[in-house]
Image (cartoon, rainbow, N blue to C red; front, side, top):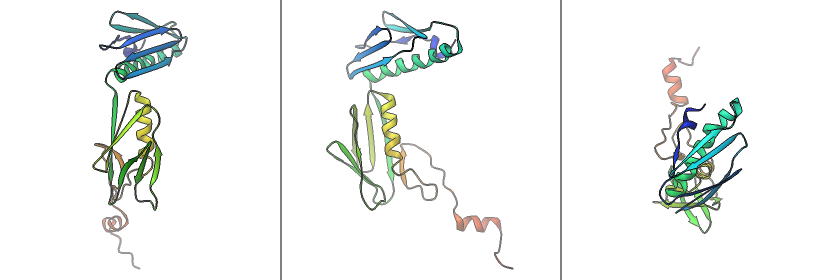
Length: 188
């Protein structure tokens, strides 16, 4: 049995969970999320908490046991508090601005890159080079952040690009420094 799956999931204040196999519907102050649960897993809803149970002792059921517990926990956190992911743009002239339902990103290309914001996601731009992505679905928030980061990922020589807030980019030495440290004179 899964260590994570054994733990009960507490229901936050103001969160309502409805379970009609195979569909779980979680409603809270920030919105509503649904999840389809596989038949190998069952839910036990009691006052103030939810327990995820594996119906059988198979390898498949045990692996899904912990996964569904984590997914339900993330849904409860999402509808009660929400999720946020922040990105930083590092580079001369790198900036972002909102244009209606799209995010225009200037990241060293000859043209601005337009990223259309999906439903359920709220994006704010601070100081032109910091992007905050908010939403109730943890997977969707992470996916949007990864897609925006992939427009210009941080490069290892100068560190320019779009990175997660607090992400450490290891810089490489480069050609000139590599030749000096190896000690080769380059002659006959």
